[in-house]
Image 1: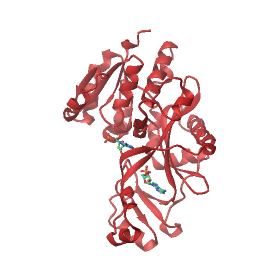
Image 2 (image 1 turned 120 degrees about the vertical axis):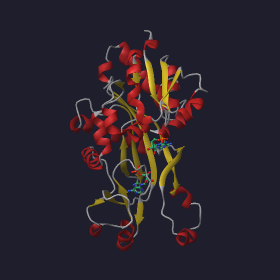
Image 3 (image 1 turned 90 degrees about the horizontal axis):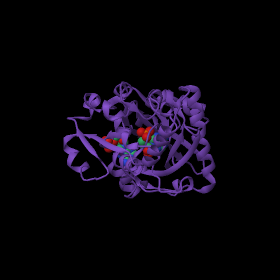
Image 4 (image 1 turned 180 degrees about the vertical axis):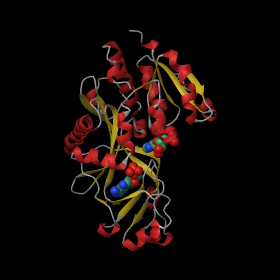
Amino acid sequence: MDYQKYTIATLGSHSALQILHGAKAENFNTLLITTPDREKFYKRFSFIDEVKTIPTFADFPTVEKDLKDKNVIIIPHGSFVAYLGVEKNKNMTLAYFGNKAVLDWEQDRDKQKKWLLESKINMPPQYDSIEKAQFPVIVKSFGAAGGAGYFLAKEKQEFENKIKTFKSNKYIIQKYILGVTLYIHYFYSALTNSLEILSMDRRYETNADGLGRIPAIMQQEIDIDPSYVVVGNSPLVLRESMLPEAYDMGERLVASSKKLISDKGLFGPFCLETIITPDMNFYAIEVSARIVAGTNLFTDTSPYSIFHHEKPVSTGRRIAMEIKQAISENKLELILD
Ligand code: AMP
Ligand code: AMP
């Protein structure tokens, strides 16, 4: 089969290098769409066959018709929703790897909650009103704030003070869970109906992680609210006795997506963002229904990927392998939207 008839393409940001490196390893043509300031950077890499520039990421729809005759398959990642928004993703006319129906469930905190509950995955308790809250709480705005502008409150008065200047009037109040954050990177194959854990990461979130490096007494004195803006990732492996539940949570999430979202449900790469408490329970804070950037730690292989594949397989390469299998079995319609 001549896979070079197909071009795997993505936006130049987030996990684009991993996705296109993986696509080239599986012999696809590769194409990157980016902004002029990043063109030079991406042209350094020989596994990217073509770099196309657009003035801003939001201009993506304007290049769609040029790409129509290239047999392009778009691989979405975190920048797609961040810079294009859900509607532009849904309206994309090029072949899109994934199920667009999942976008609404990923975006809406109420829908996420319903999905996680249906999957019997614990979530941090959430409160309709501060009167009922158990402290400390974390207050999060709706929408893809990406951890910016959240605040913590250790008692009601502190909440009342901080909410006055909070930027968003749509927010949720959650119990703050003290534990180890762990982001689990899954891949579910719609072709074989099987689930793999490919890797895991923790995030470095400034300045939440920076605050931990100064003594508690000084933390009190400087009175800084932690910010959860992510700037990098580090690897972590999980206690092996917790791995069965990690796999089961992923399977339950996929099963309930087929019931709640659509027959196709969730497939391809996704991530469950969890916090693990001292009683070894997972609390899920979010589902990302796409490749997450923490997988960039494992552009070759990972301590988990190696158990599923004989060769080095990153999440980016795993996506290309799935597309390749779908092409050779004539089943592309199962994985494209
Ligand atoms: P970017 O294209 O880097 O601006 O990122 C797009 C989206 O992905 C933003 O919402 C970021 O918060 C998220 N993101 C980017 N890099 C990472 C990372 N290394 N770990 C977790 N999330 C990330
Ligand atoms: P999110 O935007 O929901 O991915 O959250 C961003 C970051 O805030 C997470 O990576 C955690 O570090 C922190 N966080 C969010 N929710 C909670 C919670 N309920 N308890 C403790 N930390 C949280």
